[in-house]
Image 1 (tube, rainbow, N blue to C red):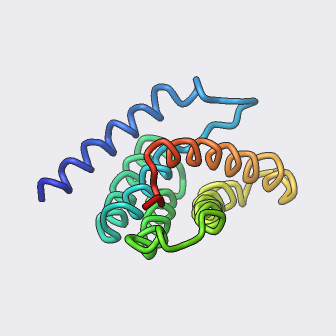
Image 2: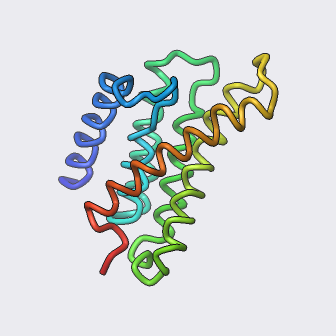
Length: 158
């Protein structure tokens, strides 16, 4: 119970950090998602169920604050990412390092497919523009930050 409260409060701080300082990390209008990095970290290092619930909770807060028409998409996306990352909890150290980063990229692609493609499905953007101007840059930028953070925290190392 104490662990859940601790991770929830830390998640709220990550959410506030992203909300207030996300524009500082913006490059050509592309901002990374620190929340998805946090959910992947929780899934890999702590508990699959906790990652799923934290993903839902934080995603629902994000959806509530942004006021999108499709409330719950971010909650669903973060829950799915928490589930996928939790599948490798305790086993990530047995996976070769290159494959670890391929998995991290896959987690990010799943998240951004949910959030970017679903939210922009009724927009005037063509599919190519959405993929090449938003989906790939957001994924690569967040992957770069995730890689740096995970190297510093030694996630996936024995």
